[in-house]
Image 1 (cartoon, one colour):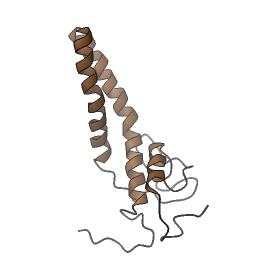
Image 2 (spheres, one colour):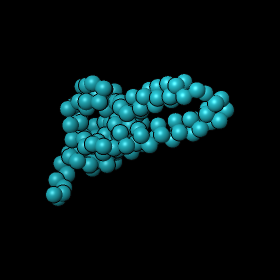
Image 3 (cartoon, one colour):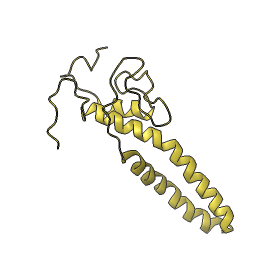
Length: 136
């Protein structure tokens, strides 16, 4: 297996990097953990040494989390309310709890996906040897 960070001209498979990011693993080797905490991306991979500090996930993961959880919980709320006509406190407890649990589950995975996409696309310094971008 060749080391992609040593060969800047090699193609990086987007689907593989996205899957590894979803699993919260290094997009280069797939072995080392990407996170040092819940959402803190490590500076380097503990397994292969790939630099990960270049990422710029910013508001992407929370936005995608809100989009996905909203599309899961929204129809669920409508169906549950029509089917069971629950009292308001039960309804709120169920769907607030579901929203929190789903959000906490999706957020680090989606951050890993975004870091994987940036790594595969050689964005924000992940290019290793590529000339710096001219973004002001």
